[in-house]
Image 1: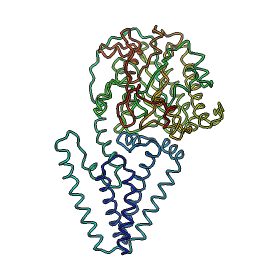
Image 2: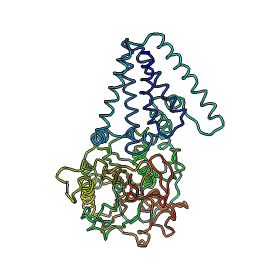
Image 3: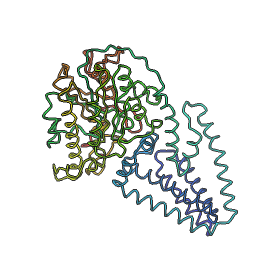
Image 4: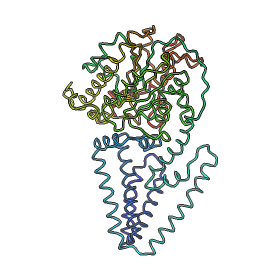
Length: 529
């Protein structure tokens, strides 16, 4: 009777990960429950040994981690952990991890509770299990190990899709989120092709509008929170003052709501359908500028990640000069490196510079993005004040760069990688990434180009600046901005071309790379998330 109670208890514990596994088949949920029960029986049956105790701690760690990750993504984003999200996790720096944990401390508590419950369950039940039960559990687990490959071989025999062996096993255990990590690591094998793939360029170099080009990539900035775009609070007084020197795009949209997807697409000649084949990222703005004879710089406050696992780092590593802030801090900490890049004299005085700055902008939690003395109480809402203060801090950051460039022949392009959603599903103010079922606001970003008095500002039809534009086409815009006139038909996607036609359809992807259309995206005001 006692053994039966333990078995039922283990089944109930194992059913919890299955319930949080998302929209999968009932058979898959049953498999997760059964394998979870077998693993618990094996841990309890071997707990009396030192190896068994170590194994129990390890399994408890993985069990609690998997359950906490699932709970977090369903509670926060109503989404299952996927390979795209796994890529973000793999390339998250330590500072961002600490910030996110502090912002979501209740999930850390949830993890500790799950770990404790699992470990104590094994500890308490171990003394009631005999060797016969342990051997039976081991035998059934071996049957599972043999059955899974055979099942999937038959299932996918007539399909183009497939699962990796490790993905097959893990997807039907209480550690199913690890299968997304395996899938991501497999997909990222192609990242090395980015640096080795040879791109054949065809272009004409026109008389450049400037000698120094600075590209600033913002982070998590909503267009409607800049007074430059009509926001009720004066968050961008410095940019407002310089508006006559700018081309300000009034309806720019990001291609994706997360950095790991949006930045590579915004810098490369790639379509959404080509994203799985990493070699397409080889044709990016850094590689193009290098080919055209520019002196290229990449200066980042986002922390350095492995170029073998990050498309962004692989693109950044193509720059001739690279600098990652050792510890991710305030964006102003990279200003000394920017000043050095601007003022360094080149052996060839006719050579142009492209300086790319990857900033941390308004990434959540936004109150951590600026010094305490920069906080401004624009309204009575604390979260709004934090976010708006981060925008005001970015305004000062950009202005300091423009001051360094005013006496030179220079141009600065700024755009944000993506925006954020402001309202959660309870209609409460909570700035967050629109990963799953994103709202329109998650894509509405600022985009503008500034020209110094000594540079030539191109003439542009004012109507073009008021039409919807996707930064998925930024590669072509930046190419023309640098004076590199490519001969490809897609070059007409640049608003700086006379042949440019505003897009009738603006497409984007969500955090799981599902294709979306701007016209069908709901607003968070009508449907908060």
